[in-house]
Image (cartoon, rainbow, N blue to C red; front, side, top):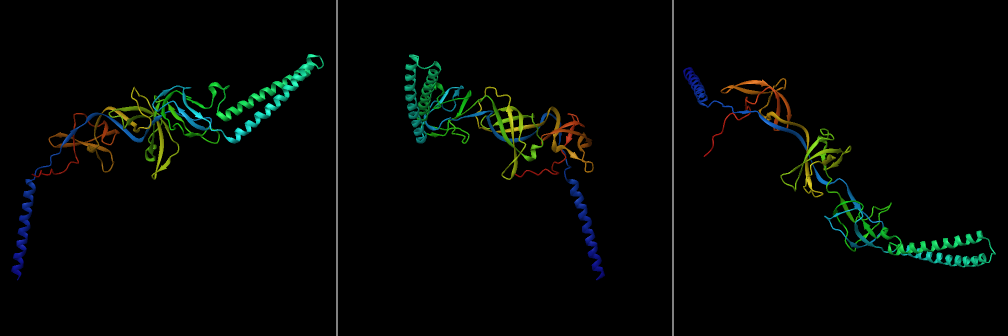
Length: 371
């Protein structure tokens, strides 16, 4: 019995010994790990954040009427360039019955007063010619007669304005003729002939007849998340990409950052504005969607490496790379980093452009390609 146990133990020891020998042999037959290397490159590195928005005119003027009525004619269309004073539309006034009745009664009242003053004037003139009354009495009667004539003319003009919206004595100041107040391009004409419009006053914004803007002065208006707003400031340079204009970027300058954010889809968004600085002759339509790359930092033509080549000391967290000194022999070199765009990072000191830097995170084994 004891002899059988001893034999079993010896067999197990022999199997373990030969198994260890086989493992060491197989391990020795594996190909050694060959690390690849890369060199530093000269690149321009830009650290930026993105904002989405639209291209809009810096100043857009809404042309509104000063009288209510119905559009009788429209003389412009979207896309036309117009000047201040150019005729835009004509309005046909729909008279208010109450106002029309009141002004008509006023005309009749002032006519009665005028007829009465005219009789008094003629009577006083006859007496003055005969020397019965003094010049002062005659002058007073004459003044009252002239005032009655003026009141009658004013009441007739008021009646004409209420009835038609204008008067022959107003000439170019007629409220029924709507004119542009600025130079620019017509962006939109939201009304048509036959549409009813409401006048602009203290209680109502009024109906917009046309929107006019200088398309040569365009700006970017966008929104940026609260996590990024603390990184930006006014006067930072930006690069604007318009979706409808391919292969072209427009330079700009950040001009405004909203002091108050608004909640949109559960996130706080801040409005920003930027002025375009290199419009050249490219026509940008108002309202086009665009992306603005706000440049936070920029390093021109600097020595840089991929961020994936950087390692960090486990204790000090200082960055370093491993530089090849001979075939597959590497030495650690501490480095100082600069601007990073998330892919490449600027190397301020520590390595040269000729150094071969170890790709330390490559796979330990290269999988064999399957047929």
